[in-house]
Length: 107
Image (cartoon, rainbow, N blue to C red; front, side, top):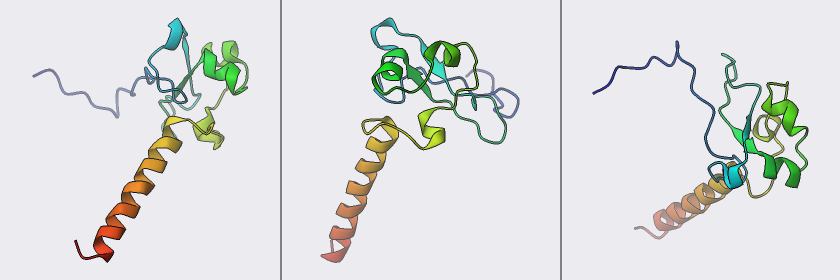
């Protein structure tokens, strides 16, 4: 077993997957991380690939990649329709509906 990592002292790394298309480094693109990555109050690990930046017009990819003041679409509440968080929320809503239906019919 390896050493214990204390997240209070070691900030979590940026995600290796694009928040929008969910692919890991698609087509060799570099990922740009959110400006909130290492902030203590609102830490955000989300990253978006260059392809999704272009496709959804999310701003200047080069500036975001090079540490600019770019906040990700999740933090600004503007995620594209196929982004990971919206798909996850949709699946959770379907599961909740099924559970409520099962409870209603007594199973």
